[in-house]
Structure formats: structure tokens, C-alpha cells
Image 1 (cartoon, rainbow, N blue to C red):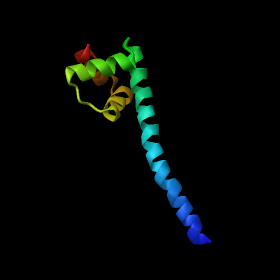
Image 2 (cartoon, helix red, strand yellow; image 1 turned 135 degrees about the horizontal axis):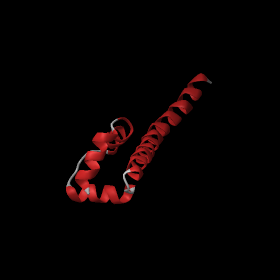
Image 3 (cartoon, one colour; image 1 turned 180 degrees about the vertical axis):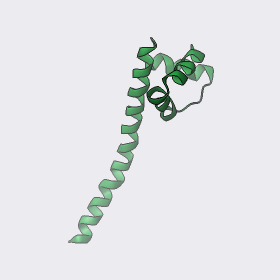
Length: 81
């Protein structure tokens, strides 16, 4: 009985590790968008412009800047616009 429960738990753990990645990406997007709205941008326009400019900061780094270092985030946004 215990082995079946462990296999069952393992299957859910596998699936939820994948779900966690999506959850974190959505959270990063929300944090970036909140920082961008204060600067007069939208998330989609910023990401499109950043790709065209070749800025290769990932969403995790951008979200960290938006949340904890807004002055640095503003400089990144300024370099994109």
C-alpha cells in the first residue's frame, strides 16, 4: 500500500515541478508589467522592443530589477525605448 502511495505522489511531484515553472513565469510577467505601467509602457510592447534591440535579460532578472531595483529597471526600459 505504501509503495503505491509513493508512486502516486511521485507522479504528482513530477507534474507540479513543471507547473511551478509556468507559475513562476506568470509571476515574473506580472512584476515586470507592474514596473512598466509606472513608466508608461505595456509588457507586450516592452518585450517586443527589447527583442528587437537585442536585450537578452531574462524575465527573472527583469522581474527582480522591477521589484527591488526600480532605478536600474527604469534605465533598462529607457535603453529599450
